Length: 427
View 1 (cartoon, one colour):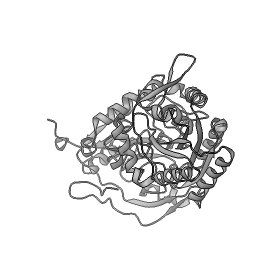
View 2: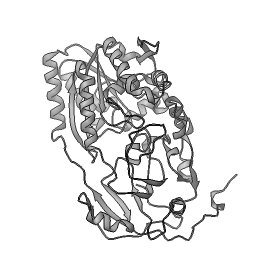
View 3: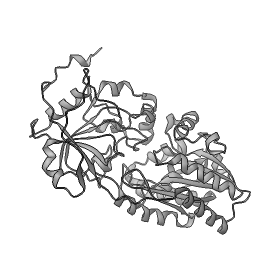
């Protein structure tokens, strides 16, 4: 069997440049009384459309939405106070290994358990075909939710990782794909991301006509992973309002504020970070042929590991140039390949060159970058593509970050903290 320790690493004696801790500053709009805002909006909805006696399915997804456990708990409680009978269903397409048990487990990691929320969780991969598009495409929907008196959809509105359109990732996508479970997700992904700009609104409209959607709760986050807005959206307004909220989400989204990058070191990727493991809206790299993803010019990406909450699903690893053997050893290929096959995007499931240590992977990326030396290498290290305010940059950026109005230098340059095995401390 191949041993990565036997690799003759070009540039093995390369002295990596010291790194400067910096803070990138983004707009920091934030909701102060999250619980109160949610409760008041649901109470106002109840005055317009009484909820008493209704059995309401609350759809909870698999993305790492800020404070999602708290949000779902407050929604469930607010519905119950209005006299409804809420229960929760996982709305995450093929995530969680495309099993009911896996999806229930994903919710539990976000603090969404029956004991915590005070309501039943009904996890099933069964769907009902509730409509059909003009081209014959069946519209799948969670079977249990389809039988409820009403459905509440909770999701973050944000730019999608594979296409650009007026409606991207948000409430409509939850209706079309999240609540479509594995069957629905696989059916729609068969059309390809190139059609999602028209397909997701069409499926969402079909669901809105066929299923009693009570309301959507749209969440918008800022660049600090804090909630900038939370808004109850009535079914009749869902698509139009989501388009407006997407514009706001894009204006608040974090990014890399640097001019160009030779090597981007990403400590961790995962499905809890982005649907693409690491967000193409940050890196500019997408596993599909799509326009509109803007980022600083970037030569090499190194991925050091996976998040714990991704459970071995390394979706998006194929967008990296280098990784570590430890990262590859942590892959659950059943979950990884199931998700990749469902989405119809094999590029994201490719395995980049895996080296024996963090240091070897970073050195290989620097050595293979064109027109750069150790002294001039522009290296950026981030924890993941959600945690963007606090990053590290190499000394070659000293003048640029010192002059940038939205970047603050937090300390002196420091050496990489490799241990005797060439590994960095985990996030």
